[in-house]
Image (cartoon, rainbow, N blue to C red; front, side):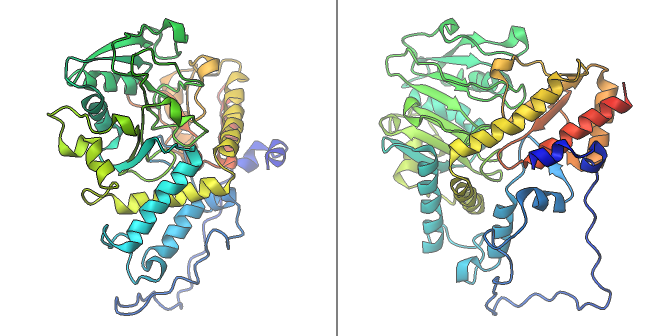
Length: 424
């Protein structure tokens, strides 16, 4: 596909897919069966039955969604969820209606956990928890669970907006301090690991592995110098985008709505020996022991979101696992960064090349804000949506998570070249 795209004129790449023909006026109206009837979804193609490529399926929807989150999901996952929505695997119920204590959902959440463990090679030393409250709730949960009291120190690498928020929240429940900050450099770089001023008495070292807003990503991880050897990572925007040695971390947490599911579910992978020592003030829903002891079913979990995550995990395994997924992500990001760097300064990515994110690509136009607004508006008309940079930094941001097809990136690059040619 990449070779074909290279020889295709930009105007052809930019052509929007034809809208589907309207149904015949003589066609009978759709009539849904009553709930008493058993509903069969056998006529709906499953991912294995579909002959469409992911790129073709995405194009059929009319848009490529470059949103930072909630973000695009694999079409095969959406199609399978559609097929199972009304009658989940012969149960006569939607999974959205089922009791979270029932055998059907119990099987679904266990399968999701097993597949996630397989994807990341999660060792038996770690719990996998399906939580609520977003990664933002973990900004408080981490110090509450890992610090014995609010006077315990904790180290933070502040590499962007999200790690800064995590640090500020942790100060309420620990003696958090900044071990390194990229603020003076406008969060466009990451530190040499020996430049991180760690406190050996700190309970943990916290990083954000990928800053969604500023587009900086750790390619390796610092070694914690605290006595317990605890490294904590907010992996929300590059979770399951590449292999990770989970054994190096005391805690990994991530909102699902970037790479592995819809909004509503937060995943935490926590070392078992760190569970059960939360501060007395810890709310029950922020205590990891609450969820570990109840297999993530202490209260009603976000059932549908967890089910979708499970389908995404199956899809990632079917692609060959995270090593193969990482290759695809690196290829997509390389195409986009190459286009920026080859534009002669027309497009500018401020991030140091060695730490550029494979997931979130921020850039500006040298001609300024009005041209950026025009760029974003014209791109949307061509079916490339959600390219506006975060409100705190402006510019343009293309989030190219796992489910973004290569064709979407190729179309964006073609548009960038065309826009530059028309607006020199």
